[in-house]
Length: 225
Ligand SMILES: *Cc1c(COP(=O)(O)O)cnc(C)c1O
Image (cartoon, rainbow, N blue to C red; front, side, top):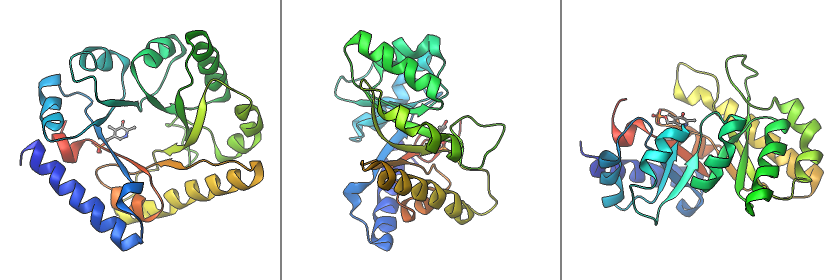
């Protein structure tokens, strides 16, 4: 199947998942994860009308973002080291992977220095896995007041990569935990955290049923890496 056909199919699956969940399809943004693919392959998705893309490495962004249309929105979804923050902020529009209070403070300082106020999401290590980055739910609750004081980053929501499960539907419990964590933070801090970045090729329908607003889909659009 072509990239164009894959996109058509994914969009129809998003529509069905939204319908089943009683949600408006406009609430779910498809992020096409183009990591490992060269600009020419990504261009096929652009030609098919896709405007929102995700990358997990600065270097790939540096190659592809300047090579493709200026009308695209780029989400940074990979692990972020401090020494890359300035360049990531210069290229990407949204960061999904702020995974500690320290990184949030650092990013805030760099954004202030650059005169920016980027949208960011806080990555949650919802399964408390040692192999994964992110705030534990407890850390996030403890740090949240301090996070809200950072005026040069706009925290719009939470992101997660849940533990591996055998059946994609089993991811629902993890996605629900992230949503409930978000709901709790909204109530206790009287703020809005509208975005939930969760769901990939294997489990995006389950994520939509649990409230995802950003789904990050790579393989099902571009092919196996
Ligand atoms: C690679 C990646 C994805 C996309 O995964 P697929 O299984 O290819 O859809 C989503 N999120 C993150 C953080 C990734 O690194």
